[in-house]
Every structure is written in C-alpha cells, then in structure tokens.
Image (cartoon, rainbow, N blue to C red; front, side, top):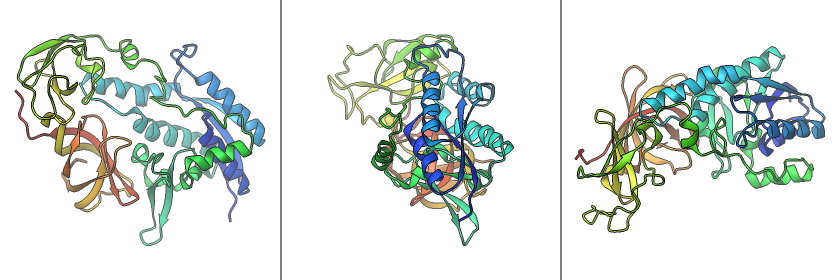
Length: 375
C-alpha cells in the first residue's frame, strides 16, 4: 500500500482524533490542522473554539503528530455566512453546514493542505469514498453507521475533491470509534458530540440571528385567514417549527384532520408578499405535506446529472430515504415527485438524491407543492 502525507482536519472531537490514529496506524505521515472558522465572539460562553483547539492539540500530543492552527474566518464570512444571511433575509432556511463543507473544509482547507505538500486530506465525517472501476469516477457513499451517516452534508463535493479525500471512520460504527479512543486513552474519548451550526454553537438561535437581521413584525394567521397574533419577522421562523410561536393558548375548534382542541400549532407557510406567517394546527395538516418539490443550483457528484427515473431522497438530515422520481430541468434545476408525502419540505434546505448507498448529489429546495391552496 502506498504511504501518503495526509493532512487531517482535527476539530477537537473524537471522530477526527480516531481518523488521525487510523491513518497513522496504516503507516501514513499524518499532520493535523485545526480550522478556526468563526471569531466574532470568541470569548462568548457559547463559542467552544478555544477549548476545541486545546482538545485537538492534546490529541496531537498523544498521537505524536504536528498540529497547525489555521484561521479561515475571513473565507467563512465571505463564502458561507454572507450567503446564510442572504437566504434568511429572503425568507428561506439555509443549511450552512452543506456550504461550509463545499467552500471551507473541502476547498480552503484542501487548498491549504496541498500547499503543505499533502497528497490527501481526511476528516472525521461518517461517509465513504469509492472508485467505480467501470466508470473510473469517485462515488460518495453513506457511512456504515446509519445513525451517523453524514453524506447529506457532503453531497456538493465533486470528483476533484473526492479524489483527494479520505473518511476512515465512515467504515465504522460510532460505538467502535468511542472504543478505539478509550483504548488509546485519548483525552477527548468521552467528549460529547457537537451539535448545531458551527458559528452558533449551543446558543439560542433567534438571539444570534437578531444581531444581524432586523425585526420586521407582521401578522400570524391560521389556514382560515384568522389573525392569531404577531410574529417578529419571517426570517426568525422555519417551516415545521412548533416552539416559540407565542400562540400556545389559542385553540382552533374547527381544525382539520390531525388537529383538535389541544393539537399544537406549526409554521406552515411564509407569505412574503403580505409579510404574513401562516400556521396550522396538527402535525399532519395538509399544508405541511408535500408530494412534489423543485430544486435549483444542483451539484452532482459524478459531474453530470443522473438519468431521470426512480431514486430515493432526503429533504432534511436524519430522515429516512423517501422513494421518489427525478425529472430534470435546465440550468441546474430538477424536480422530485414522492410516493409518500414529505413533511415540512423547506425552501433553502437541501434535497439530496440517493441510489441505494450511493449519494448522487442534490440541490437547494426552491418550492414544495401541497394539495391545499392558500386561504
């Protein structure tokens, strides 16, 4: 087996730590890089960047590898955060982790690693890369652990990026990764997995967004056009949202199926023209269910779109693959028709297409069609 100089993105978490160990055990020359992508409030109680670097440095010390601290905050602000704010201001709900992978971790980081003389990079993502001998193209596969698979977030990676990328823990279950870390006595063996968006951390999301987007209050109306309260700005809500609506005490005795006197309220639509937030009662209200969607800005792993036909797709992370039919349109647009209605399909999120365990790519959801017209 050819030995490579591999630069590993050490995040301070257990997955990237075990990634570095596994490559080292295979005889590769391993160098660690810690990426700092956010610095606006580095001393904030919610920002774990400083502790994460200390954890990554401790891991590098135990493994006996070099580690470099690299600041990508400027690139992140330009390429990821600016787009994140644009999408929210337009009433959509973006997924910055998808953009961060495409623009920072597998572009800025990859470029930096190549300047350091790396032949490959590696991260602690739960996914796999396989070279298809027949097509001579690299395929992005789901991680072996279905509960941890992160191919959804990686679907915008291209052939050039995948050719230089390794995902060692994608071959393992999370329990095995924890076991290896404990055996090695890594200082972060029991460290809790990070959640949330990297630049927000565990902080209240609305509080964070309020720093950058002005409040523009408007009416909250139900599916019959009745005003139930006031919202603080359409940007601060997402489809399917149940908490923080401020209308918990309002009952709709005439709620359609799935509703009822005490059924919870959910955000179902954002009417940008009238600046109205539309809510419905009941998880299975027809306004929350979509059989079709359109998506824009498609990115296909193989470098070209798959043939129209039957596949499966996810419209949000951690959902089961849903059977669907793909139809292609021009200019990087496509449509998906689902066999079973999908819940709270959200513009701005990613629709990611699969053929079995192979992630084919995807696009940004533009519209979702329900069987219910607006009130």
